Each structure stands twice: as structure tokens, then as C-alpha cells.
Length: 309
Length: 256
Ligand SMILES: Nc1ncnc2c1ncn2[C@@H]1O[C@H](COP(=O)(O)OP(=O)(O)O)[C@@H](O)[C@H]1O
Ligand SMILES: [Mg+2]
Image (cartoon, rainbow over all chains, first blue to last red):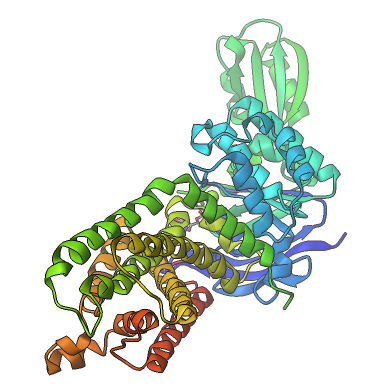
């Protein structure tokens, strides 16, 4: 697969002197879903803004579909759809007006059937003649998506698409994304909902303090960095962790019915066997044992710990 | 460079015109009514007591200037608001990320603003016939000056809209800059009626050339040669386009 978006050594220093991006390089493959995960202020929106032409990079180069986003901005931008983080919409326009405006702005001829399909998919068809100011927040977010899809982009940027959105809409959006992906659209979404990255992404990039910390296949990331935990169910309720086991860093949960032990699955010695023996010696009877992979959330917290302050 | 994105120009133009029609009352009726009041007060009431100016009744003499006054203000405020609003509510992101050049974006907004002020000017011209005896000696020249004024001052308004950081600035500049230029631009008098010193000062006012040229196309009376008027307005248009080109090139007040 070839890179449809290529970011090379991009720096961004805002007018005030703040360094929002520090030598960011990133290749995004055609057809993939890439989640950019990072805390607030990490530079996610800045990066997207530079790729889309809303902000200018202080240095570095970006290409989309092989076209330089500065020298060949027309060709590059035609390929891009952007759903911005903020709900920026003209309050007095109707849904249909604003969506067909977007299509025209991106140089595409009128296509009523296409717009109808998009509005129906996003359950906006009934609202097509409604003024935007009368829509709920979630509906407005859908309008932004409809605008971005109106000109049939090959690359779709979703900047925190599900922030402040209800569960139903979030699920709908995930469906929409899957559908777009199946049609070969490349999707880049930023989020700080781990659940979202975990569910949607093929690859995950972690950005903090203006730097890309890593970009990995989601599964590989999970395996590579995944800490595991061992959950030991006790036959009888325990009142506390015996003194002899204090070195293991155990925690007692579920009202004293379960003991949890964290270990690193990549290490040669996990300490599991020794722990089980020691538990036995301490007189704790086990009824069951299971392992759990820690969520990406923990990975994320680990990686950005000490970064965002 | 690929061909111009004319679809984008059209999209902006149509979008802006729809906005105009949605607010028809305030955008068209109000300026037409206030100008008609000028006709009544200056033309009919006061004008009947003032001598003719260079062979033209005062009521008729001020019509071209009054139309210019409205068209100028309308062009500036319409275009300024047209581009300020997307900046204000944040929808400018879409314009900045669109595959459209500065020329196309500017053309869309400026043509829409110019169309609107042209229509208003036309209505006012029609209304003027009810109040005063008008004849237009050079209709084609009249149209040329009319259209050029709409375009060039919409360009100026577009620049003001990009520059403006808040609503006060958006409203203050047309008021503070345009009103004096217009009132001291010979809309209500012939420049030759002024003392020598003030005549000289007046020639630094671009509006003088507009009003003079426009009035000439009605009555054949001009304060400055017609060629100079035409040159002045073309130069002014050129400067505005240059400034806008610079703004988009540097991203001033538009891009971080
Ligand atoms: N226009 C601006 N001027 C100055 N600083 C900015 C501007 N926009 C964003 N920043 C700063 O750049 C950093 C990154 O912001 P942003 O890209 O919005 O982060 P994210 O989207 O990851 O939350 C933040 O510290 C923010 O305060
Ligand atoms: Mg952001």
C-alpha cells in the first residue's frame, strides 16, 4: 500500500512563539483508518489544519495523493474532506443549502442523488429544509459530516467527531466510518476516547506535546505494550493481603473475593508460578484463575504520563 | 495550475444571493427608502429654493451623487459583512480548505455584494424619476461607472471584512472613512463651488472622480476630465485586487 498522506518534518510555531508541532513525520496508507490519540493541546488539530490548508506549516512538507498541499493545493484539497472539531455552521442556512454549497465549493457539479444518499445515511433527510440553528448538537455534527462527504473525498479527517455526542450518534458514526472504509476512503480521526481508537483504527498514532510518540498497528501495539493482569478468584472471602505477599503489589477487589496481580507478559519471568505457590502457603484457596489484557487506555496513560501536566 | 474552479465561484455567489433574498427587507428596502427621503427633502423641498447648478436643477444635480452615496456604502458594508460573517462564526475553515484560489473566493463574495448594491442603485435610480426630471446623456458610460463602482467598493469592503476583528470595527470603518469621503466628494455640490484651497484638497478624494464621472454621464457636467475619472476608478480597483492577493498569499488575518 502506498501513502496517500505524507507529512515530512513539519514544524509549527504559532505567532505567539508557541511550538505546537515539533518535526512531525507521518505516512498514512490509502484505505486505512488511523487514529491520532493524544491529550488536549497535543497538536492534533494543528496537524490536521496544516494538512487541510487552514494553517500554514512553519517548515516541512505535506503531500496528499502525491500533490504538495502548498504548490498543488487544488489537486491536494480536492481529495480531502474535513469534519472540524468545533461545530462551525451558518445558523440561518438550511441543511440542504449548506451541504450543496460545500459540494460546489470543492468544484463538484450538482448531484442531487448523491446528496440525498448522504443525508439519508446520516438520517438528515427529514431535516433537509430545516434551519441549522433549530438542530440539536448531535444533528449539527451530522451536518458537518454531510458537508465533508458532499464532494466525495478520498481522505476524510474527523477531528474529535464523537466528543460530546450521545451514544446513539456515536454508534451511527462508527457505522458510517465502516461504510466509508469499505468504499476505500482513508480515514484519520483524532480522539481522546480510547474506546474509539480501539474499535475503529487499523493503526494508532500517539501524539503528545507536539511530537508523534509512536505509530503502530493497533494489534501490535496491544501485544507489544500490553501489560496483563492475573485475576485470582478466591474460594473464601479474604479480609486483607497477608504480610508475606506484600512484594507482589496485589490488590484485593470484589469485596475480598478476587486478587489482582499485574505482570508484564513480555518478561521471561512473570512471577506467576511463584505467586500461586505463595498464595497457597499463605493459606488462600483459589477457585479460579484468569488473565486479562489491559486496555489500550492503560497504554495511552503510560505513554503520555508525565507529558501532559 | 488547473483551470479555474468556477463551480466554487458560483457556489459562493448563489449562497450569498440566497442570504440576500432571505433578508430582502433590511437589505434592499431600507436603503431605497432612506435615499428616497433624500430626494424629497433635498430635491423637492430644499432644492426648489436653490438655484440651478450649471444649468441643472439642484434636485436633478444631486441624484447621481445620492445614488453613488448609497451604492458605495452598500457595496462596502455588504462585502465586508459577507466575508466577516464566516470568520466570525468559524465557517471560514471551509473556504480556507477548499480547492479554490483567492481570485475565486474573492470573485464569489465580491460579485454577490456588487450585484446587491447594483440592484439597490438601480431601484433608487428608478425611484428618482418619480421625484425629479432626469435625463441620461451617456447611458453606456453611466452603466460603466455604475458597475465599476459596485465592484471596486465591494473589493474595498471585502478587505475591510477580512481586516475587521469585531463588529464595532466592521461598522465603524464604513462610517468613519466613507461618510466624509462621500459628503466631501461633491455629491451635493460642484467642486468649483469651493474655495481654491478646498478644491485642491478635494482632488485627493477618490470619490470625487467617481461622482464627477457618474454625473457627467447624466448631464455632461464634470469636475474632472472623464478619462481621469475612469483611470482613477480602474487604478483603485487594481490596488484593491493587489491588496487582496497579498492578504491571501500571506494568510494575514485568515490563516494561523
Ligand atoms: N491559533 C493559535 N495560536 C497560538 N497557540 C495555539 C493556536 N492554536 C492552538 N494553539 C496551541 O497549540 C497547542 C496545540 O493545540 P491543538 O492543535 O488544538 O491541540 P489538540 O487538538 O491536540 O487539542 C495548544 O497548546 C494550543 O494552545
Ligand atoms: Mg483539537
